[in-house]
Image (cartoon, rainbow, N blue to C red; front, side):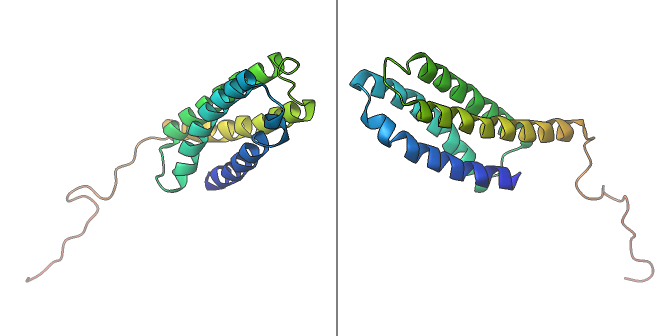
Length: 141
C-alpha cells in the first residue's frame, strides 16, 4: 500500500504542474476560477493522501479518502468535458487528465480491497492474555 501512496504523490505533483501550464494560460477568468475551484478540491484530497506517509491511516480511512478523490476527479473531468469548447481547454490537456484519473481509480480499488479483507479478518488479541500462554517460573524466587 505504501507504493500506491508514493506513486500517487508523484503523479499528483506532475498533474498539478501540468494544470498550471499552457492550458491555464489560455483560459478566461471565469473558466480559470472554475478550474481552480475543482483543482483546489482535488489537491486537498491529494494532500491528505500524501500525509499518509507520516501518519498511517486505517485501511478503511484510506479507502474513504481514495473514494473521495475519485469522486472529486470525476466532477472535475465532467466540468472539463462540458466546458472544453467554451473555455478553450486543449484536447490533450483534458485527455491527459482523464487518463490520470485512472490511476486514482486503480489505487482506490487496491486500497478498498485491502480494507475489505482487513474487515473480514477476525480480531486477534494483542499479546497474551493475563496468565494465558505465559509460563511462570518454578521453584524458589
